[in-house]
Amino acid sequence: LALGYIKIATLLGHSLITASGEGDASYGRFVSTTADIIFRATHDRLLWPDSRFRISSFKVSRILQRAPVGFYTGLTPYTAQQFVDQLCAGVGFWWDIDNNGLLGLGRVSRPDDVAGTALTDRHIIDVAQLEPPDTINPPFYEVKIGAQRRWYDLGLNFAAGISDAERAFLSQPYRYPDPSRDAGVRVIHPQAQTVTLPSLFDVLADAKDEQDRVLADFKQRPRLARVQLKSKGYFMPFGGTVNIDHFRYDLQGGRNCRIFGHGIDAAAQTSYIDVWYQ
Image (cartoon, rainbow, N blue to C red):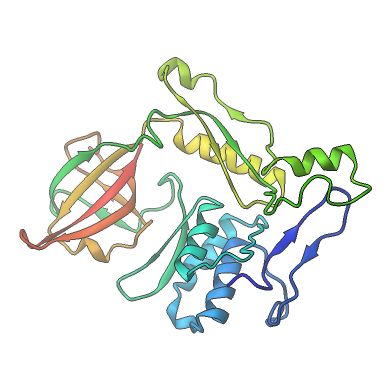
């Protein structure tokens, strides 16, 4: 899946080594961002036409994350789903296939964009709170994100002329920028977490930017809820923003929420959406 689309090595002070498989620049350019790699690979390897994509979501994702990434499959067999999973996880993205069978992308982020839908008690049957998973609760106090992954260990003595700086660079699976930290979080949440995350970023500055964003989004305790609806909630886009006005759980007056799940309750003949808000 990745042949021809990835940078397979970066050494200090050395030129870049890139794959040269057929089709690498078949559309006139190399691709290096997550959205472009997924779009190119699924086009070429799955033979999907443009009509199988939510094109608008790819355009937005390109704007949200312009950083170059590197992904090397080596001899590991990847299914298309595993390939897209790895690429999205490497930059804090999600992906889904919607009810129309279209592939879309988005970024895991606070719901601070414009809501596409507004829900009130006229649409809502019930709201129940959900317990946040341990991965994001307690909130984050410090975030470290590794970049410039070393994909394959050639051994530190594989060639002559390797400097001490390059040897140190190659000895670790990731390079890390200075941690992003908010000391004030522990005043409110004494058990706040320090998290270390891998990534696919090629440039340390991009990893640092992502650290700052993740810390800003997850330094507060998240609120999760399941909203049972009279309308067809499963048609609302995964990752979309919805404004919910309800008398419980600090939703009075309307609050933007991010949709992270939806489904159907066949017994009750209703649908629901799972949302995240702060």
